[in-house]
Image 1: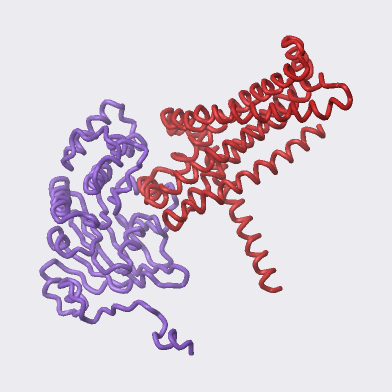
Image 2 (image 1 turned 90 degrees about the vertical axis):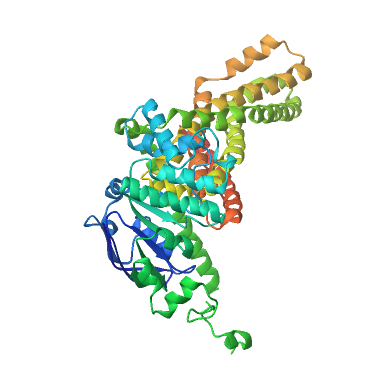
Length: 261
Length: 263
């Protein structure tokens, strides 16, 4: 469904993505994992057409997103649902209006039908009856669930999740994980999940890809990843402080910066 | 020296870059206001009304209070000067013309720039920082159409209305001084104001206020859209936005006064 070929992106001369190759098949849940700053979120923003790559192509159903005009891109985006890290609900609108927003903007449905659809979507994420609350009145986990209801409001073919478990307690994370699995099984939605939380990654993934320094260093099923011989992958999934992944991010030599020579 | 020229050069380039972006956004916002209804994407009435209440109705009190005081001050200043010529009765004429042509639109614009322009930047800036604007874009909802067009339209409708109130209350301030200072009959003062005023004076002021409304709305929204750097950035860009909006309004006022003076 989505094929990424040799994707390169630089910001101010710093290479963030250096030749990403990735394929996501229809109906599967692909987890993209990696440490902070490895380019996960940047990759996600390319997939949804928010950033334009410096090189390479991103094929969605065979068409290159990177070369589309804004109008063409908007047509494709209507098939996408995106759950942002913070939920990204509009704070000036109620929960119900937030979920209704894509419907009001992109369909000719009348008010009554929209209300019913909103109720259905909120029930899917377990939040029936919360329509009239404002986003500031609900918790972080609930905001994410509302964000998810909004993401699936237009019955997308593919849903992107940016760090669905970030900042949530373990139970809420598990609830969200189950929602992700349910949605992809029940509705046949393709899911792309960006996360660094290994527990939920193994819980939801059909296949996983590990990103390191702007490159995909491993792709496979959860079992294949678990049995990977790559020390970088092993250090990441076991979460140990010692290993080949360097802690330091400084580009200058330490001694040089201390002594100034 | 090289640094100085470099600095000036970079600033100039930045200035023109901002200017072109603002022009583009203005064009796009107007495009959606005018063409939107034909493409089944009109400015939503709910959004428009809430912005009109926020920008217009909620600004009414402060506009009236300030205009009243400026009217009083203006009339006292006039009385003091005109006494030398024994023509204090001209207070009515002067206040009426000064307010409709100049002070009404300018005072209103300054108040609205500080009150509403700042809140546009802060609100949209917060939305940008919290990924809300990105969310809109990825939902294929054009943020200019969704966020700027209603605000622009609300301002274009409400600022001229505020100016009319400002004119009236400013003249009332003049009337209070005229009545106390000169002891003239109310009917005489009003008669004299009406005689002095021409339709042209009022229209001039309203035309100005129309352009002030565009400047304040677009500058406020534009700086909100380019906020970066979290909460601190929102504060910094709000300050920049209000300063630039005030400078633009006063400069535009000078320009329009010159144009209307010549024609």
